Length: 227
Image 1: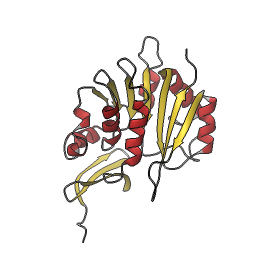
Image 2: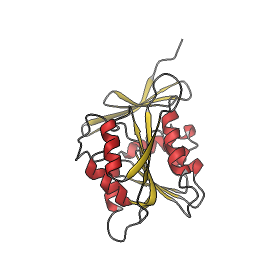
Image 3: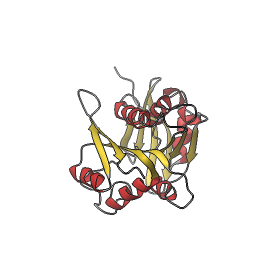
Image 4: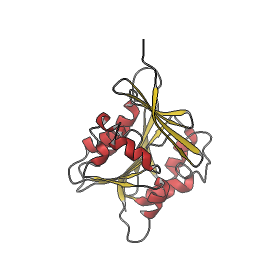
């Protein structure tokens, strides 16, 4: 008989309630407003996201990567495993408590990836961090990885969604180095989002990690222009 889930921490932050639950030694749930954001036993899409995106830029000198959303750290760990010692990984995470959990009760899941010396954590919305990279004199990224609990979908505003809308995609393209990689997690493929990617001068491949059960989508997009 499975052990019951127990809440080990719960934070009320503005309109969001963040909750961390544990069962046994290594089973964890991360919830937002009662909705399961992550399950520690189901991370194949996060691993695929980090591995593929960073594997494509690992050969560059001192590659610079931005990850939007920390979660339990699986995407970050996969990214670090694919990158050289010279890399820098900026993690944009809105909620400091998520970082605390990844350094505390969740640390063993990823050998405390968030404390890797290549990692810099910024408490900010990844959309704002991307915009900052387009400003004069700012450093651009070789790869930008978006791993938020809401991916592109039919509900995404075509023009003004801060991550997946047409304006945001054009901004992301400007924040990338020539031939840079933009990787996105989503629950399901979204044809309208794919059209917006192409319009923003990305080529892309669509991955569906795993062979059975719930299979999320991972988009690996490459900036087309080489300027």
